[in-house]
Structure formats: C-alpha cells, structure tokens
Length: 467
Picture 1: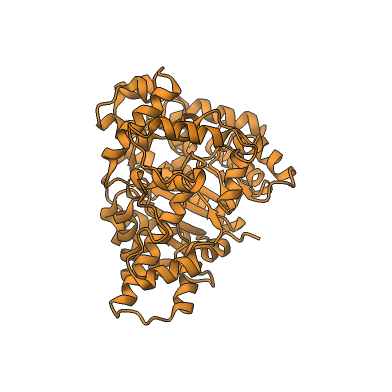
Picture 2: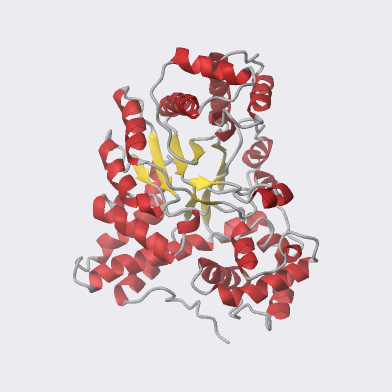
C-alpha cells in the first residue's frame, strides 16, 4: 500500500505546489526552541531500536495510547521495547485527525524511506526495517540533525546547568549545526514551590554568592545570565501558567522574598508582585544583552495527582489554562517600553482563544528597526496541528503581518521531529497558494516565494542574529 505522504501532500493547488517545491522545501531549519538533550548531541547518541528513538519521552503518543485504553505497562511501564512499539502501531490507525498520524508517516518516509502505513499488520515489517537502518553508521543523533538540514538548535537549559555538553559541542569542529543554550529560569519565579528555598541555595553555591536577600538573588541571576551569554545563549524562555502583573517596588518584593525564605507561603497577590518584578528585571537584563525573551503562557501542569506521583512530570497530564491576559500582558510590555528596555519578545498562547489578544498586542510595541520585534509565537503544543497552525497564521495575518513571522519550531525531545517544519511549510504554502488561487493575492511567485522563505528561515536567522 502506498502512503498518502506524496510529494504534494497538503498542497491543494498549483500555486501552493510552486511555493513549496521552488521556495520552501530546501530551506535550512532554525529550530530555536526544543527540548533535545545537549548530552545526546555531544556524545552523538546511537539508538538501540525504534522505541528508544521514537516513543521514549513522547507524551503526545502516550496520551493517544491512553485514550484507546492501552495499559500503562505498554506506554511507560515494564513491557519490552517491541511490545511498546506494537502497542503504538495498533494505536496509529485510530489517530486520524490528530497530527500524530501525519507526523508518524512523515518520519517513516523521510528518515526510513518507508511508504508503508503503520498498523498492527505492518508492525513487524516496519520494526525490522527501521531497526536495521538504525544500526547503520550514519544514523546517529548528529547525523539525523545533519540529514534534516538544521542550521541552529536552541536547547532548553536550567540556570544551574554547567553547560558542559555545550562546551563539548562547541569544541567539536565536525559539528556544523549551532547548538546554543536557552536560559529557562522557571524555578526562580515559582516562589511558593516546595523546592524554592533549596533551589536558591543551589544558585548561591554555583555563583559563590551567599543569598540572604532578594538583591543578592538578582546578583546571582545576573551572574548566571552572563555565563550563559558567554556560552552563546541569546534566548530565554519562561513557562507561565498565566501572565502575572502587579505593581510593586524593590522594598516590597524584598520583604516578600524574605517572608518565603523564612518558611512562610506568600499570598497570591504577593506571588504576582514577586513574579512581575523579577520578570521585569529579567526583561531589562535581556534587553541589555540583545536577547530574545520567550513567554510560553497558559499550561496547567501535572493535573492528575495520582499519575504525577506514579510517573512524574512531562508524562502527558498537562492541559490548557484559561485566564485574563490582555491587561497584564500589555502592562508588562509597557512597563519595559517606558524605560526603553523592552527586549525582543516571543509570546505563545496554549489557549487559542487568546490568538487575537496576542496578535493585537504585539502590534503595540514594534519598531526600533527590528523586523517583528514582538512576535506572536508559533502554534504551540495542543495547537501544532493543521487547523491550529492555520488559525494562528490567519489570525496573525488578519491583525498584523504574517510576513514578519519567525516561523515554526519543534518544541520536542525527539530527533525525528524536524518533519514538523516540513508539515508547517506545506500548510504555509497552501495557505498563501489558496489566496492566489482565490484571486486575493496576485500570482507574483518570486515575491511570494521570498515571503515564504523569510517565514521559513530568514526572519528567524535575522531575529536571533545567527551568523
């Protein structure tokens, strides 16, 4: 059986096909936000079988399998690797309508040259074929990156990370892809988390600063940001359940910090004041270093307490949050803008109900000779399917400028996820191609092709100053 992943997959008209095949298809990838392991890149990890490469850590697939009633032993449990793969193979046909169905077959096609639909009947054939390829000399973590034409990777790194594997990568001249750290200081913001005091203690140790007050913590943060900067970091990332904004001053926030350090839980209003002041400090710091600041807004984490206790975080029990966004987001951006210390910022929403809020907000804070300085970030997590990607781009186009968009990312822990860029590019070209076919845009293919290439590659390359 021939797969539906043919050369014109998702390209529904002549213009879409021209834009994809002549302009988008061969552009390099700037994967500025992902969760790949720097260690696995540094050590050029080889994978023992398809389960290790494809299923380990993939909570997208795990959620789908659970929805079909598959026992946990075949998902995160003690079943054999083949049994886990077989369980996934049985699940795949029932994933129609979910991007997993498309991604699965794109990955089989692009990396393993398989045109066979994965299901219970073809499971053994695909398992044997792919595992044989995995044993070949040129099928390792770095070779997959190279095959995928990836120019830059932005990993996600804790402020306490030594970045030792980034050092190894940077010292290896055979690695042509830029692999740069991203500063992810979420633990520093979650003041009410049970591990906050311990984390602050570890921050003090690594920076050789005895943190007894809030200002010393800010000094320690600056120390780590400077270290990350020396290691090539130019991007930060913040995962926020909602967008906090409460005005306060250094004296008040210092008292809140001290209250928590003394072992007391702070109130919701105090927490928001602490988070707002700290985020503003970080934004000013990023501006001084010409970093881009990412705000991933709107996830509720680990909602199933029993499963969290059994399996831990990032195992597929997170959800979309609802909250008030417009006023706090505009207030935050405006506070930095008033001081002329607004960095480049990429704003993502997990809740697509806020698409127009963000699309309208980013237009309020542009300028300074920076194309798309404040970005409406790519369709993320529960939105990175065909409809979500289309909705994001159409909403951005309706309210702002799609042509300034910095494009897609993988947000993934899998080395095979680069097909998500192809998926995005096909959807982008079909969108613009449809406008042409409908007579809404003139068929100036060189001009439209340049816009496509900008969105796929050049906008991000310039935005992050990748040289």
